Length: 148
Image (cartoon, rainbow, N blue to C red):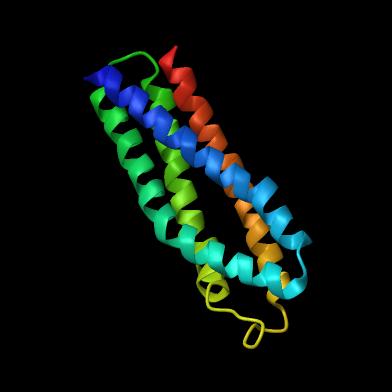
């Protein structure tokens, strides 16, 4: 059962890293290359879609990592798992304090109601997101290292 927890946690966190990496380095570049109104509408739609899904994925990843840390307290690599769970906590805090407020505004924007500084706000979200991606990549790396 413990091995199953390790594998499921690693896969769930790894998939989350893949999605967030894709958003940062692929999807946002595609959306930013589209004509202004279409790109902005794409960002808003993405914010609605992922803004609904990702909180569950982040919290699920955190719960799985914390469960692994507790269940494996006396196993090899427990310190790595605890550190990974700490990094996932940081990613959730960053999301709530920095990214979600921007996303909540962005997902309601249309070409008719978006603020004059909408591009600046999206660039700020991107910068925070790059840092969050680095944090969750570090957490994932620690979880993988704990497996060996």
